[in-house]
Length: 402
Ligand code: C5P
Image 1 (cartoon, protein in one colour):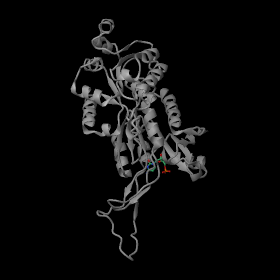
Image 2 (spheres, helix red, strand yellow; image 1 turned 120 degrees about the horizontal axis):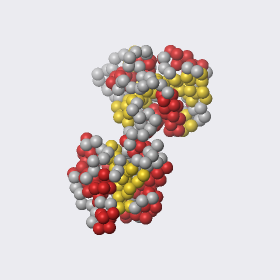
Image 3 (tube, rainbow, N blue to C red; image 1 turned 90 degrees about the horizontal axis):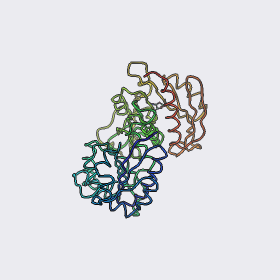
Image 4 (cartoon, rainbow, N blue to C red; image 1 turned 90 degrees about the vertical axis):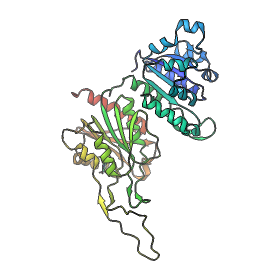
């Protein structure tokens, strides 16, 4: 995929530096070539020798080393790169980048750089939330620096929270995306994901148990394949997927507005579990319990069908529209009828009866209904299913005239 593209990888001094070794390995598997700079701190966590052995080229560490500068000056290191990747990016190096400091080889190379920059932050969760770090990251983003991660989870310091280095493969995929590789390069994709919340009053809502895992995984897989992705996401516990523009909404009406705003798109995947109804009127104040009184009656109104709206024939209809059908019985039959009714190209039908554990679970099992019939896919992780769907999309759109 990344054949011959050159990445200057800067490894800063964080405990996650060991994962940079895997970034090199996975990147090389995908055809990327690496030159490496280790900061002084980075070299405390991984040795120049292990980095160089995996990269197949020397790791540079010292700004004022005469041999290093003679062999490969800091200017040439960046000029000869197609992308500069900082992984892990520590709070310190992020601050140096934001403020233009240049007191070692890594920061000097970054200041002399005119190539795209991708950073993968990694640090303690409280540090990551610190307004100073957030302001520095915002400054870098405003200058066009792309970030991947950090993710949530157990941190090396024993605490739990946001701050984990993104997974090595996600970092490599983000790099490939910037380098402009991938079968969906040049295409725009729109994905809806998660549940919608329909307000009853300022504190109560009607919602559902959708986790958003499948839709978010699809958005990320589309982005990894080079598409420019807008994800319109209902409330979920998930972080924003790497490489996507994520628009956070709550209600079906907001989801429809967010989706329409992202058009035109080449691909639309409706993976959200949109609430079919909403309270006809949202109470302006929290509804009061009246002792001994009857419970309130909530009148419902029908929500717009986002999939059917976007899939309807018209100049803005995406070239490929994919819907989901969550069924508990006669899965293929019901989904086939739904495909016709909603005028979408494909329907991914899944059995969500309680015993399957699909809702909120890590796996999914679908039948893919197209104009030519139904294909049964094996049970797959939601990430794997997303990759397989994206491969099918790439294959289908490859032959269609743009
Ligand atoms: O009609 P049903 O809800 O079973 O259809 C499911 C498919 O339609 C999913 O792809 C879902 O994202 C989409 N949908 C929608 N807007 C609605 C209801 C469903 O986009 N209001």
